[in-house]
Length: 469
Image (cartoon, rainbow, N blue to C red; front, side):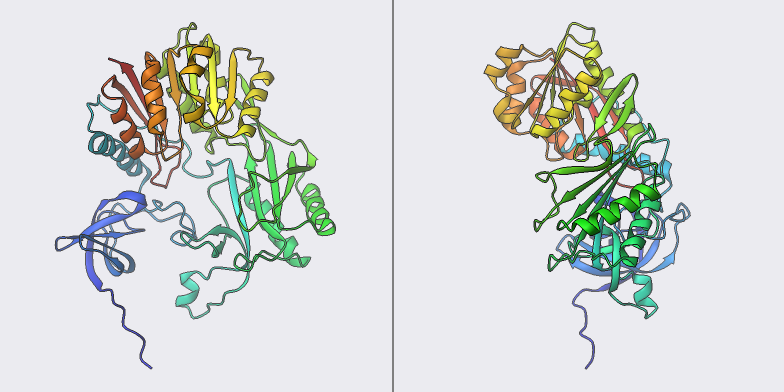
């Protein structure tokens, strides 16, 4: 039987001309835009189309006809497979240029507001080994890399401990070495896999929901501390203790060794109890003269050094003199709130997650900060006129919402509160642009500062200062 012919065309000799959204690049085939990942401007490629629409197509590279002169050799052997670090082939200075352009285009095109000159993006001093947290997934059916398929050696048998393949919940790439987190991250992951296989510990099956080992979360800090949290699908005490004791003995640098039992069908652990097996139940991170305790389920910016630069920008944009009441919306574990508290009269933080609020209170107490108040609840329900009357009208509002941006009701409450300044920190310039348009009638954008938190990805943080008209 002849193989079924693909309903999508192949395009030969497509020249890549620009960078597009979501880490892809693009070229034009006649009047149709073609999006192709893992390419850079100047590449000429043969492309297999796998998605066709009236105005655009998407595809993947079959062959490189010509390499771009700007292309650099990717540093990771897993490039193109795991879905991370998609811009490895693009020189880092050019990554920054495209991120700068992305911020400006989205603010102007989507926000349609008057903007000042946008400050040059603050690049990361580290483009590798910059993350302080990684989560790896166990699977008893490893993803087969394309190189093995091409060599005719493909087999899905075998265990994997690594990252999910994008868009495939049950496919996990076995990672040999990851360039995102400094040691002992790779050593710990590889040792855990080897111990598990040598001792018959069952890797999880993501389709049938059976097995023992689900996830391992590794956190490191600038203070040199290391936290490891193992997630098990069931509590087999003998196997659990054997693995954790192995880690304790093999890696004395682990300062916090924890485990979680997650017998649910999904991987979320927010509602699961954390048990400390050895060491402290937290690690400590420092920023200026402040110490932050980070618990296994706590949120902390995953690029510690760039987080400091980001927060300095937010604090500078707040222009605090010591007499202001500051509202820190979407405060998380209170990192920004505590960071600016020394220059404010009072800081009020609001966050949806109750555990994060408890962390925020603990971090204030740890640092002797007594001018912060923290409240848990849905922002649109907590932040209302009665709340503002009780805690005082804010002189400055700092907000760092999720990627989806802010609810229209929250924007209306902020406008009614009429603070003198708003500092909007965003990980998504597109939704930030939409929200800035809501404030435009009453506020003028005075400063814009992009910050690159995640080298080799298309993601970018952006800080905007708004002043009341």
